Length: 196
Image 1 (tube, helix red, strand yellow):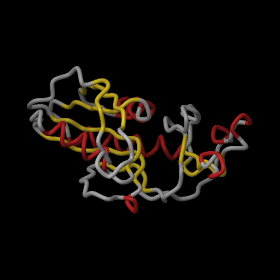
Image 2: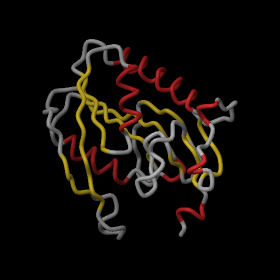
Image 3: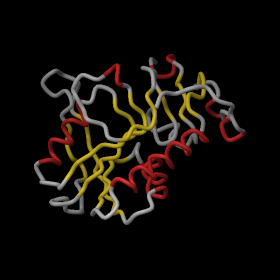
Image 4: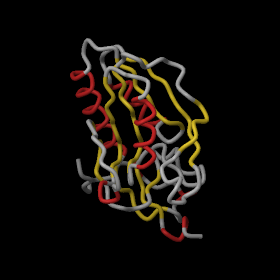
C-alpha cells in the first residue's frame, strides 16, 4: 500500500518540542491504525489453526508489534530479539550480532517476523537466514514501512503496511538517536537534523 495524503487529526499535530525537526507528517495515526487492523485481519485469516509466533527486533518495532498483536484475533505467541550492527564495510554489510536471542523455540512453528522498516534488506536477510537454520514450519515477513527502491537483495514480504519513498522517517517507534519514537504518526525528519 502506497502512502497518500489525508486530513490530519488533532492527534497528528506536530508537538512544539519537535516542530523544528519535522518537515511533514507522512502517514497519519488514523491511517496507521486502519492499516494495522487490516494486517491483523489478514494474519488472523491466514494463520487460523496454526501455532503462530510473532517475532520482532527491539526497539523500533515495539509500537507496531503491540498494535498488531491487539489486531490479531487468533492465539499467538510473541518473542523479541535485539541486535547490534557491525560497521558499514562491504565485508560486514548486513551482518549483525545478536545481543538478545529468542526465548521461544521456533522449530516446527509458524513464525511471522515483524519489522518496522525495510530498505536495503541486508540486515533482515541475515536475520531470516539465521532463523531458517532453526527449522520453523514456515517463516514469513510483515513490515510496516517498505522502501523497495533501496532494496539490494530479494525478499519475499507477505504483509506490507505502506510503501514509502526514500526519506528519513521517524515516529511510531522509529527513532533518530533515540528521539521521536513516541510520535503517534510517521513523520519526515528534516535533512539538517540528521546531517549534522
